[in-house]
Amino acid sequence: QQIRMQGAMRGQGVQTGRSTNRSSGPRSLGRSLVVKVVAKDYPTPDFSASETYVEAQTLSAKLRSAPRPVKPLRVVVIGAGLAGLSTAKYLTDAGHKPVVLEGRDVLGGKVAAWKDEDGDYYETGLHIFFGAYPNIQNLFKELGIENRLQWKEHAMIFARPDMPGEFSRFDFPELPAPWNGIVAILRNNQMLTWPEKIQFAIGLLPAIIFGQKYCEEQDELTVTQWMKKQGVPDRVNDEVFIAMAKALAFIDPGELSMTVVLTALNRFLQEQHGSKMAFLDGSPPERLCQPMVDHFSARGGELTLNSRLKEFVLNEDGTIKHLALTNGQTVEGDAYVSAMPVDVIKLLLPKPWAAMPYFKQLNGLEGVPVINIHIWFDRKLTTVDHLLFSRSPLLSVYADMSTTCKEYYDTERSMLEMVFAPAKEWIGRPDEEIIAATMKELERLFPTEIKADESLAKIRKFKVIKTPLSVYKSAAGREKFRPTQKTPIPNFYLAGDYTKQKYLASMEGAVFSGKLATEQIVQDVGAGQISTSAGSRQPAFAGVAVAVAGAASLAAGGASDLSL
Image 1 (cartoon, rainbow, N blue to C red):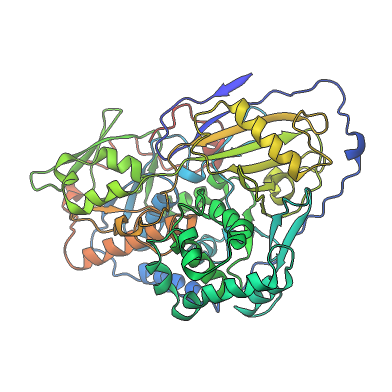
Image 2: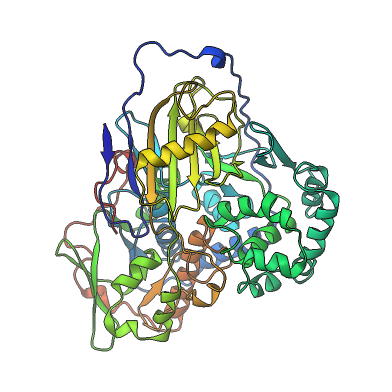
């Protein structure tokens, strides 16, 4: 049986996959019968001394303490991904009332997830929460859901292509930054030689000395160009940067802006807990997005699903009069925030706006294709309770979610979740072909347990989630095209990881952009640039606004039409 969810794909996933059992009769485990995987979560790190965490905390406090408006603004937020939900959450904190419109029947945008007919979740991506995500860490604390992050051992673990089934580890000791990172690198002698480490360190000196400013100035260079310029050996690229580039941005070092890599390294080296990783204990729509909805709904905000934008209807002065939806309804507000992916907003720009330099710059940005794969096996595999860098030509990172995540925990059978990247040459290929290629890669990673012909571990079912246009492509030279959250249109703002903020194309970037958009709205209200002139108009949604309270109805079932 094939399950295909048809739909447009701009910035969203298209799910396909086989969900029927592959074998009948009793399960035969053979030599894989005795498998013991040790799973252990670690305490939540103490971020209180982190400068970036304090900055994020301060911005949250600023929004909460903003002067209360005489009449709250009704702000229409288009998109219920992390950027849109973050915007709505902080708007209510600042005393305003968001109306969130989501084109699909599921929350999360690029972190959406669905349940299959067996009740198993499948997600648009393998989502990792770093300690270097200060706004996300603050968000979890503000929502009272810190315990939903499952922190793992402070390590980075890479597969070894030269020794199938073996791993090379960077273990970070409990030392202040940057010493914990330096010791982790010095103690690993499997991936880089001492001369290579020294040359790499010398190449990084400008970033260490001059900080983020230097990192941002390297945007015009690809990773490989920067390495050549700094005299870093090619083997550093082969051993470290290929895996890093694919994990950070789903593209190879020959395309990736060096700003992305340097920004990540800068955070990891400057923050003691920056490189620590956590898994969410369940699906993002249920365990992260729904608490955000509950937060702003309890304070007067609204959420409506299956509400897809058709067009912006403008006043004579070019400002937004109202939104027209594909279902024939109109939505009015005092201000509007687009939290849609960059590829979608480019398609929906009104003609009077499209010629403006601010909006024309968006043409320099586009989403990158991503494929996320879930494979459920008929047995438990020998694996590690952590994110693993595959260092394979086709796979970026992977994890056995039956070990790392409480929601998916299974002591008898493994479910591997993998990011297939770069995906450009594969996004249009059949699922069976993608799974066959993935199994060949897994045979190298699990040589004693997986064979491509399934003569060992057998596939029970799989899901292939294709997102042809995901986060913006962080290629060299793209930074100058990223827009600020404030637009030239007085009652229109942008939020999204592609907008100007220092955390680039990440979940942290999306959440931070929502806070920045809110901050700009609060400033404009204080300056008298936005008023509640729409206050006497019709309710934001004529009789159909629904504040969604139950997570179960959102998380169950896949969407049949995935365009926004």
